[in-house]
Amino acid sequence: MAKHSRIAIIKSGKNGGALLLLAAAAMLVMGAPISAQETPDFEAIRSVDTDIAAIGYRLATANASLCDQQEPGLGLLFHTPDQYARDVRGAAIRHFRFAGLVGVEAVLPESPAAAAGVRSDDTLLGIGTMRFKPADPQAKAGTAALIDATRAVMALPPARPLTLRLRRGGVDHDRSVIPVPACRSRFEVVLGNSFLAQADGELVQIGSRFLADYPQWVAAPIAHELAHNILRHRERLEVKGVSYGLFSGIGRNVGYFRQTELEADILSVSLLANANYDPHIALAFWRAYGPAHASNIFNSRTHPGWKTRVAVITRAIAQLGPERPHRPALLDARERPLDGDWQSLLGKAADRSGSNIYDASAGVRG
Image 1 (tube, rainbow, N blue to C red):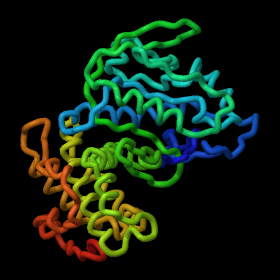
Image 2 (image 1 turned 120 degrees about the horizontal axis):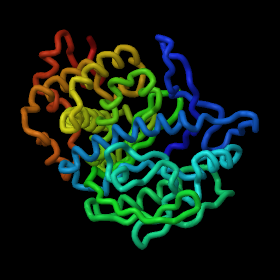
Image 3 (image 1 turned 135 degrees about the vertical axis):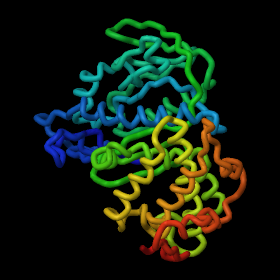
């Protein structure tokens, strides 16, 4: 799992409005020191985390019927004290009123947890007969405790009533929550200045830079990463023994990666539409992001050119139809091995996209 900053800062936007910077800062989870005089803007962190969690929750619950791996959708965003470096951990514990290992960073509006009366800054002691271990104030900074706690919740029945054991203001109390089924994925913001977007099968990570630069379209890259998890792309790539990093754009790796990218683009259209997002935001995102970031990983040899992606997404939107939830045929292929045939996913899309002509080794050139 990625190690990332838990400090966010505020900067002025292009029009002078305040934007939560996707850039951050002074201290990393794994421990760059921060002076006692520097106070993290914890509410800025909460705001960014909540914005991304709300989009993820909306996508995950609306598309639960498309997911063969589900979790209980509670509408809760968790965090743990040891996500914060030791230098600021005491301040974080006081600010968020941690009284144990798992804190409620946010409760999403109109969610099962909100209906049950759970509040931000409650501490979750356990669910049913399951209890979380006490927090270790000297624990090394990281996300291991959060991952373990989240996996324990993910493993619970997706629609069965659950009893949450909470602590608020030193008083323990129970809340009965009736979850809704959701796609099994955790959504995490990576604070910083880079455009990071990745999925590992159970986690979707999105760089806060997307929220800063493309706030009206950020649901599009999130839906794309969720699509990777739904289609089990990480698992299927590993079965093929693909290489990552410097060798990802060499040989047979290219076809497999491009196949997964285009499949995720196609499925993301359905995910957006099913969650009542206008799927055209995916087109708007790529038309803005593509030409502005030609050297980014989204445009490397492992990823089709942005014009091809626009053409493929356009065709997927045209094929949506009125029925919701829309279930594209490629979902039926998630149990089969990847074949690397990414060109077949283009259909006639590239021919209809103007002057775009794709090259199997170099992507689309306009």
